Amino acid sequence: MRATLKILIVGMVILFQLSSCFLDEPISYRTDSGGVSGGAKQIALGSYNTCAIKTDDSVQCWGDNSKGQSCVPSGLGSVKSIAAGAYHTCAIKADDSVQCWGSDSQGQSSVPPELQ
Image (cartoon, rainbow, N blue to C red; front, side):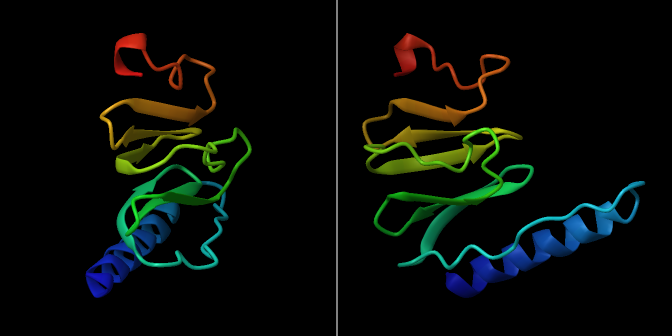
């Protein structure tokens, strides 16, 4: 599983590097996560940040945090799935409720009451 995840990430970085060749300005990005301790079951890629569900079902994020998208809320608990947008992140928790954090400029982090 780790080898597959590493290949997937390397492939995404290469694709990102190739696609950035067609832009007028170079894109800088951080690739050092400091390591996901314990391994990862799922990753979600935002524009400039990444989040992972660790093997213990907790979440670890790294990269750009200019809108709070990499700052995992305290008390998030166990997570089943995660998705990252440009400046926000959302997770489906173990109890099937949804929690989002980061930018809410367009309401993207305001979870409807029936999903909380």
